[in-house]
Amino acid sequence: MTAFLAGQGERPFRAKQLYAWLYGKGENDFAAMTDIPAASRARLAETARADGLFLAESLSSADGSTTKYLFGTDDGHYIETVFMKYKDRNSVCISAQVGCRMGCKFCASGKLGLKRNLTPAELALEVILTERAAGALAKNIVLMGIGEPLDNFGAVKKFIENITDDHGRDLSRRAITLSTCGLVPGIRRLAEELPQVNLAVSLHAPNDKLRGEIMPVTGRYGVAAVVAATQRHYETTHRRSTFEYTLIDGFNDSPAQARELAALLRGMNCLVNLIPLNGAEADRRGSGAETAQRFRDILGERGVPATIRRSLGSDIEAACGQLRLRYES
Ligand code: SAH
Image (cartoon, rainbow, N blue to C red):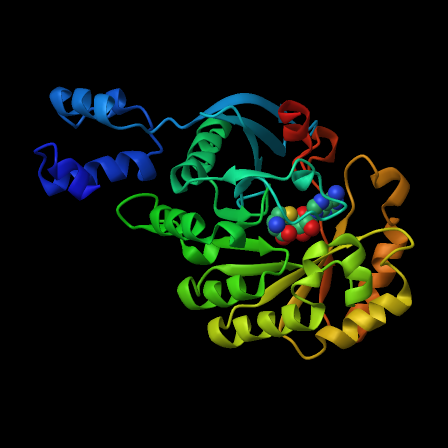
């Protein structure tokens, strides 16, 4: 940014000012940046852009805790961002790609394949524009929306560097969690290049045979390799990872499967987050609350801590690309 502004004859402090407006105050209209001289603002408006997403629709859950924002992109695509208000821990869940090429069977995000990666600016705008619309700041950012963040590593890294920079938003890297379907080389890169960022791994099954039925990526990286990569991530970063496990009735929720999962993760410093299945099939295929509790207890008895995820916003299709799908198709 300093180099770009130098090309317009601006001094270096102008970049800091602009950065503070964009990332610190979440202002994406140059005209509103009142401590920058009018001539400079006019030049910026002609040579730069900070408005790459527009808000197309928003939906709030009945209890007001969760709002889903549908953003349109310049090239006619749609992505979703979800803002969750929870006591003093607001969090924003952002999309990493337009669509996804991982093809998980239960997930709406991949139904139309991958359209393209999001840019670092679009990733930042997801945070900035939802915070503004919600009238509140997020304490945590989770990369758990549409897309596979480790399949867009370069842009995700740049975004994290920008949003955590102390000239702007100054968010802590420890407040960011990245969720992956288990791209092993990406997990290694994450540990090496962004060691403060938290890792969540979508496991959903305790063995390759079962996991392969719902997650094609298992053919590339098996359960053992994913678990080993997660363990290495812990050894490098000393941050406790989460394994996400969506309970599907009669598929992966039996006591025997809970025991198999406990044996797989035994001794790791990790947390299992049991997720109720949501979406169109949830009524038919989601496990009941009792099954979820039994599954959690079996893990706990074997020394593997597990929680059942509070599900917010299911009444507004807030999960997993369901709203976007309606627009995009
Ligand atoms: N690609 C990344 C992040 C996006 S998905 C990943 O795979 O982790 C975020 C989480 O939502 C993942 O754990 C994913 O498996 C889960 N998910 C997707 N569809 C779901 C559904 N219908 N019900 C419950 N969880 C779902």
